[in-house]
Picture 1 (cartoon, rainbow, N blue to C red):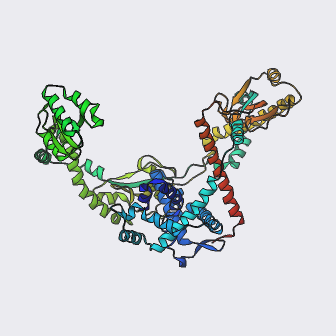
Picture 2 (picture 1 turned 45 degrees about the vertical axis):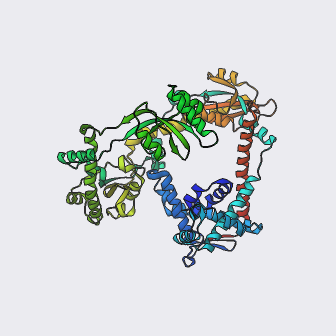
Picture 3 (picture 1 turned 90 degrees about the vertical axis):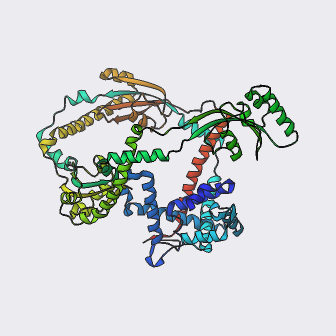
Length: 624
């Protein structure tokens, strides 16, 4: 109901209320403040105010549901666990309580009159456009509230969000802020760099057997197989049953005949009109239109000049197609009696007097048996499969419970049990990529106890039951199987060490005053220069660009040098020479305002986070 409440409110008050209500509703649902069971104990205490365990449990449940709605089957199973969600959700509850307390300590309040007005203007509490007290009380009872607790909920939500919104709205961006932001984001840097290549150095590196054995032993965790399971599973779907359901051709023919018998020919008529609205001079105007038509003047020309329907007059009175339900009854009745290009006598409706012309008529025909056969067959198969699906769905849980194997279960139900290929905790192909299936496969019930899972609902008409076929724990791979990988790792380590030492020697030369160009040429290395380079430059190695923009600005004529091993094994030596502050490109006033507003919002978010951190630092919080 409250979701619809947010969707249907209109106007300025609606915008304010929606903004205020979204955060607490998204965090923990509408019933979390007043349906507490204090006997369940406390989850936390904030400055002497308790957050009940039931509140936290309820908030976790809502958060989990929101993740499922947002991510669907792709929601990671571990992300949905209560243990994983408990910490972040409790943190948000603590932050909200601190904001509520700060609002009350600041003497913020919400008047009863404004609350009453909000409630009266809520569409869900209205009937025929007016507030209905009986409906209001009924809906509150359905949600588990009394008028007092409901108003208290609204009051606290308004206070919390009004406080946060007030803080955020106080932020603004000055011209200096924009200049500073521009100088940083549009900054360019000029630099030189040379490359110490991995390939040529790797050709000169040797790795001994002792080194291989020691590295393999010291890094054994890196050479373990991934834990995997193979499952037996029974997949039950309505579509699957329908695909194997035979349909009697005579039943298809009979269904087609029934559809033809029930087919009502739908006639589409294209209408045009000349509308004379009621009022002074209407009779004279109508008579003029009739006379001009009687004299043979083109209907479209008369409509364009005399019709009071501004929407159609420019189109010669054309109103488009109707199936008999578009226009007033008197209009439709008169139109149905016309032949194509025939013009009616005057027709009275609430809008005025119409002179109607039928421009065209289209009559639909029932489809042929050949075109309808496949659709009817699928429909009959689906209908027949529904009862079978429901029956099997009722039998499957009991049949699979404590079953020795799913093959016998499948045989008893006339289904097929499938043995999957091994897959890891990141999933496999098909339904094995479903996070619910992955979670079940590696659950204690299936993996450790060897039981069949509960029926897993993949969709309304698609379920699966899984049982462990084989478990392949993580194991250390033999050295001979990973020898090449070990040698590659050791080679890269040795090459990186050698190249880094050489790069550091080069940096010493640069710091002594030798130019990078001369150093590179003396060393027989490739060098490059990149002038006035912006942050988003895509032609330079991304790792190098990140490092260059992390370096401090050179002081005076001194350059800033750095050594950087990169992912491909090369080691780079870079020299930052010039940093130029950036400026925004020419913009109109609207673009400038947009940047100012965006920056103000960023500042607001930052200031609110700082304020929240200050409240946290001063608070007395105890978590149970």
